[in-house]
Amino acid sequence: MKITEVRVIVTCPGRNYVLVKIVTDEPGLYGVGDATLNGRELAVASALQEHIAPLLIGRDPDRIEDTWQYLFRGAYWRGGPVLMTALAGVDLALWDIKGKRAGLPLYSLLGGKTREGALAYTHVGGRDFAEVEDGVRAAMARGFRVVRVQVAVPGNRGTYGVAAGSAKGDFPREGLPPEEVWEPSPYLRTIPRLLAHLRETVGEELELLHDVHERLNPVQAARLAKELEPYHLFFLEDPLRPEHKESFRLVRAASATPLAMGELFHTRWDCLPLIQEQLIDFIRCDIGHLGGVTEARKVAALAETFQVQTAWHGPGDIAPPTHAANVHLDVSLPNFGVQEMVFFPEAVHEVIPGAPEYRDGALWPSESPGLGCDINEEAAAKYPYRRAYLPTTRRADGSVHDW
Ligand code: CS2
Ligand code: MG
Image (cartoon, rainbow, N blue to C red):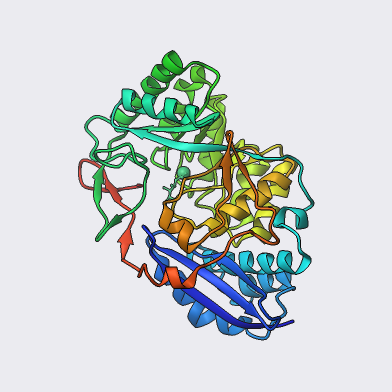
């Protein structure tokens, strides 16, 4: 069997997605993948169209590991978000083909189920504590047992996870990057108070987590982790910038609050120091920026060795095929922790059917062969690419900070 065509489809059903369709010489057999990188979509699309697709034509799609090694090491230049997102798109499509050939859902190819559904969490953001509390109660009413909570910070203009004027999620905005202003001190005062309010009002049973979004320095992160201990978070996510893995030692020593990191890592080597020293409790890589399923299961095996659980990244700015791959891995891995999810707008379901089903606090993999997703190219064409950026953040003095 041979790959005869690699189609790269850029579409914007509410936000930009980059999709990969790998066609084979077996009639009707193709695989779909997701190669979306928020704010740099066309860099990935160009890498796929101009450099990677020509290498795949004529290759045997069954040889997933060899293709992965060939694309990761063969180019000499390796790693980083653009190339690893492009590689992930190819990898997902190849696993999709393999499942379709075998007539088996992806989780079955990965060893079969170790659990029925994958415990899921959703995002709640609010302009104040009351709005967050309302959002948490609404999530509980939908059956969620784990909720991520973010809140606007007085004095800061724009807050991650809280769109200005509503409690909606963190979808990117059109045009040039919106500039947000963020200061650590009001943030550090606000978050412990938010968690105290929520434990007071919604109780101890609901699992709560919070995403710091890489904004703190080591001692600030240590302080926050320590001050959040009484509220028993499920985890505190991305306390530090990905460049400062060694600083996790300080945060770890300061607190028993579980820690999570990973969405800005792109290979298992990025993850290794935090896993090996057990400096985190959850590895949160984004399978779509990590080179796909082939690399993700190696990260999961490393993590299992050190009692670290998985919590794959699952935001709105990756497409349903990556969410589907998340859940196929979730139900097959022994060290699964929790799965982040979003509810996609109707237009996304129209263009890219097959997002995992949410029911009773968990996500359920498709039982169809492969990933269980498809691409409606006709519908995709209705939504042309529109340049959009993630916001950027500056301190009050105007210096660049991490968004
Ligand atoms: C966030 C992401 O969901 C999360 O954990 O960190 O939504 C992140 O902000 C986006 O993926 C960035 O594009
Ligand atoms: Mg995050």
